[in-house]
Image (cartoon, rainbow, N blue to C red):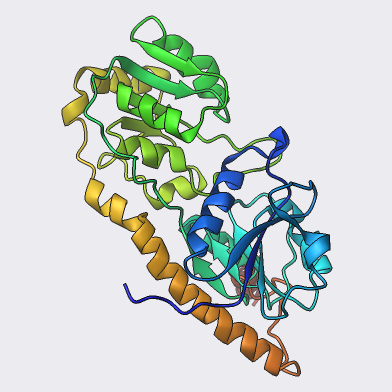
Length: 344
């Protein structure tokens, strides 16, 4: 691959690193993105709530940061306040979930972790630049050809009540079931996937309204040779294809789910035929580099234009022309026309 040009500094903004309250997939994804971006532009992780001894702090660098540097906000709940603090700067948003009520100025590009997120942002920010930038699968995420001594693997964290309270308890005396109740590191997970025949996953919309932005674990499990049973919540539909590379759980009845899961345990090798090569290529480090190079080039062009054309009249940004609003407008017009016809 042709060596990309070195660009102005990218500051990837995270609330903190070491505090347990920040430990989640979004943090790991942000740290990994900063590592990958470093080959395209000088990149540093900058914290803005907790001070970390090994990372810069936003208030300390803001006055001295170059005007052409880009600040990428990676924590949805803090985007609105960060945009206010960074007014007059080049700001982008890395969207990994859809829970947050975000009011984006039209000059803020959005990096979307999945097509599901991209469709959501098209509805909420129809005139902002939108780009697809999925996660990267680690090079050691593959089938190690180990003996699979675990029939069914289940991670309790973030799952639905149906799996927690009905399906998993019903499976306990019918197969070798391993239930993980604590946070497990990625490397530990790869080993568990490689020891398991079936992986159960079901993304649960929490009381807060959170929906799966991508859902990396089922993809990792597939690549490690598991038969995956999952729902298709949010971004999971980006890569899960029922009956081709996975099975849809929460289907018809508890008995039907159990029947299919236990059949997969007995006949794990011939249950499905995933296209491992395509999945690996789609979410490879090479694919990320090719995609981000084009995105960063477009960033340069967009920000240069926006800054040189301050008198442009931006398109409407209140959502009045978003797909969902247009849909309701068309329905309303149809209802009015039908009423008018009946009155004639």
